Image 1: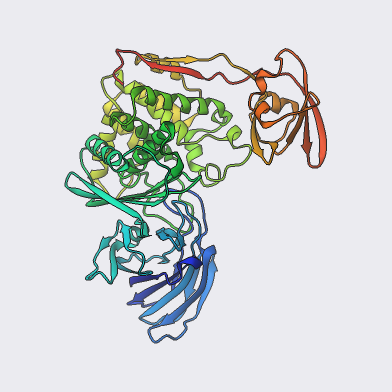
Image 2: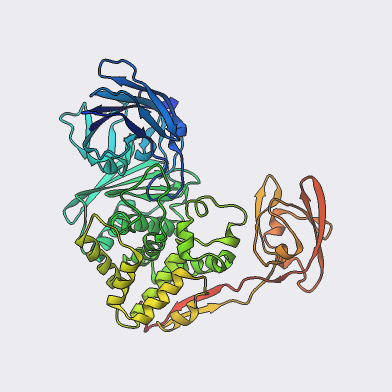
Length: 557
């Protein structure tokens, strides 16, 4: 069976995309599907919910019989040798893992659009794009095989590649550069506030730094697609491209710009780590069901350590700024009580139901494999430095292992063996414990051995709630386990009305510790399900946080 696709956008303001999948050499009854999730984003998104106007036609335009057999799966009965599957997709969600089409542009995310056929491996797929003539630019990782400027025709070697090459169409700002003789294309959609940063130069510096660190570039060309819109943030990696989402108003602010730089490094490093070096469970993909793995600490944890590290090594942030980022990560980690109950392996396996579906008690019951994973690899880097090795030695081994069998992934046993090959049994056993258990991590002691001085502050008396400020109301978003709020019976969703019989404003509550005597007893009144509930409390010391991290002169981090 062979497949070609035609994607047409006639009226972008309606957010509708028309797709026709042409199949030839069809021999038997078959099932076709629309993916339910996107590799790199571990949540069942059920893209078929946006499908409409589905029909199956033979080569003469006659309707063929089909039946829906499961969510996003259909069976075609009595097919002809040549047929087409036609449908429309509603595209009006601008994220890195969904498609968005409006009058200004089209961002096409493969898994949310292109149907596949169960148990059939397509090869040499052609995709034709038709869109309004006013849109003058297309950027994608797919290979352009157009014979003239009036036709937009692209080729994918297989279905996986088709899904793994997002497409940006419109009148976006475009630019590019070369590194190691290979083209790197840039597309910027959306508006930014004035800033003095050179995005092209800084992205190029990141590419040069990561490519030099890895020793080679594993693609022929690369695309950076960036969406600048208010209140968005994120990224999604692809085989030879990435999609980035960032609030364009924040680029002028140094702290936010550092976050942007680390995001670029993170997604670009994924070119090697996850798109090539990967757990065995992550490919070939089952696009209709969850693909469980306990090794997201490798693909996301290692990448979360490397993004800060190589952004610093690129010279785009200072050493002081680097340790400031680590300090923030540590303090977030210490505030999450879920680290006491959830291991990295279990956090990874449960990504489908926990990390991507957070709730009011998430921080008390689970830990992010991004956050803790990055900190675990920070510890591993420190341990390796003490035996005159580094995280680069491990990554070099992982890359060599991948190249020896690029069609296969790596399992935990193989990873630990690679780690043993460059270190010793003691380091391997410690690493195993860090990913398998919930034992507390001794950051202070381990960093001290590398001449990194980590100083903790004295715990400050606090209530232990995470507030939400909305419409002049203060509502409790979540409560920290074992805090004062937890012990006296405050609930998430409680609206804080008064403290000590006086109304509390947002400005006062943000600094409530300075208004309350920690030695005295106080009262808090909350509105809960239409009733006023009054509780007594005393402030108590909260979490001890990192006050400072200082790399001594002798540090070789």
